[in-house]
Image 1 (cartoon, helix red, strand yellow):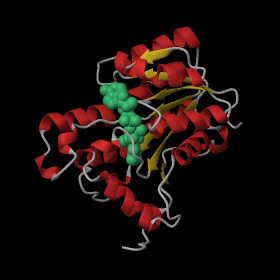
Image 2 (image 1 turned 90 degrees about the vertical axis):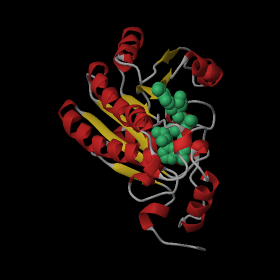
Image 3 (image 1 turned 180 degrees about the vertical axis):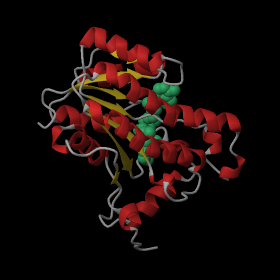
Image 4 (image 1 turned 180 degrees about the horizontal axis):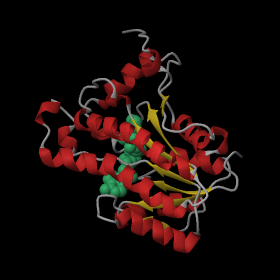
Length: 258
Ligand code: NAD
């Protein structure tokens, strides 16, 4: 129960297959109180029942692409539920037509939109968090190995993740004096709504499974448990890190059955 007595926000649960769902399960199992935000009314309706199973009866709408939406949502949460201890940012977006073929063909509008939603929103989350985390806390985002090396079809999302990872270091530096830790989990591939937009995603899954020292893909629980650790006081000295939770395939780089 490493999260007992802690309350926080999970942003980006679309359904039971989401990274955010696995994270919610681990956080709940470890004693946390969870508040969900959803992109739109449509997503809110879709996750209402699931949120209920986590005793989260109110879901707050927050489209992170809208100006001031994050600050407004956090203010609303503060007014209704008081201060919080953690935030999980599990949000990314790109036009899926540009998650196949060459990066070279990325349009300016999708480049800016992907950066805005997948990277800038995290900066805004961290800035707004200061108001509702007066006693310090821990903030996590989700990233992927495509930020470090070329992964076919990941394209513009790779650039957004590189920028996101860099922002984690700067944000950790800026918020350290307030006792707020900022980290990112670089997760191995998992079949989710967002991931299914990446061209040939099943090949990525297979490739990672084959070269992973653990000889499998990650599960939602792998990510959720790592997240619970990083959000808990057990990780009190860890900030500004990109932690790979990928069954070792990208960290070790060994190749099996290639
Ligand atoms: P998902 O589709 O379940 O979740 C993506 C979420 O982003 C959705 O809930 C969607 O509503 C939200 N979102 C998109 N635009 C938004 C906006 N404007 N405002 C608010 N929310 C918005 O997919 P997922 O794979 O669980 O993705 C969660 C995070 O995990 C993302 O950052 C993703 O890049 C990262 N990640 C995923 C994988 C993978 O293989 N699935 C691997 C590494 C990292």
